Length: 370
Ligand SMILES: Nc1ncnc2c1ncn2[C@@H]1O[C@H](COP(=O)(O)OP(=O)(O)O)[C@@H](O)[C@H]1O
Ligand SMILES: [Mg+2]
Image (cartoon, rainbow, N blue to C red; front, side, top):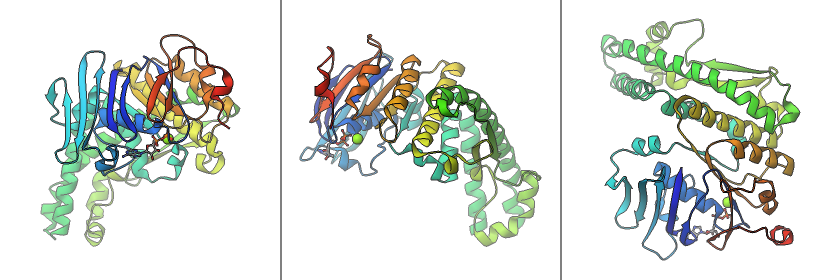
């Protein structure tokens, strides 16, 4: 959980001191108010990078030399991110400079759900692998070791291919690739099987009209199903030489969830695709909580886009019951009506780069955006 947030000179958030609630935090406001910027600031604190830009100079408020975001993890571990136009990035965790970004990620598992997450189904296998690997990184301790070892061997094999080394020199890497690749494949398959079990009940709740659907997982390991990885590597070296890289392997894995035998991208509306992706992400959070008692920080940008009122309410109801901290932005001012009125949840009105906690019910018409 994040608390005692302070954001300085970050896009249009000039100086914001912010005490978020333990569970749902609704950020409501008009277009351009600073809602996505607030989520971006938290993303930088949790992962050391932005979801909007690779050019960090863009996040610094116009005409200012630097921006800063600070907060506390679990109420006691200080964390701070600073970007200075001249000095670059500085990240501090627990009063010391950060050594590795993965250290930050393991302290503060974070899921960011973009407004256009329904497009997930049109993205390539790399994004689907990323979703699984996020889960495995946090849930399965051996995953990082196998993934890093696999990547190193693959780089070496590919370098050998490019340098046109002798067959036996290239083949030296194969047993290592096979060992780590098969492990990765096992880990991913078993993670996805568990994810599907967590996904189904959540999807039924937020998309009740599709509650009767049968889901089936399809996993493609990255090499032909009827052959072993070792045989494939053995038989395809000439093809790999022609391509100048190793084609088959765990780096080419993919998966999908079929709905009554069909591809979700082809049968679901955009709103339903968004609910599908949301249910997948919430299932990942639930799985992490169940297996490692680790809390995830959820950032959901523009919940209202593509979703009607009824479905927005259903998502909010599920989130309000989950023991995770979430930050949800929306232009739908009426959404606050559907949040339980207790200290676990909070509504913030974001206006011209300021954040104001809405404590007393405000006349409804003030919250209607035409
Ligand atoms: N570097 C910057 N300095 C100052 N303002 C910025 C900067 N980058 C973007 N903005 C402005 O910040 C405002 C908030 O944007 P955003 O957080 O995306 O709004 P929302 O998500 O509430 O619609 C926009 O008006 C945008 O033009
Ligand atoms: Mg926005």
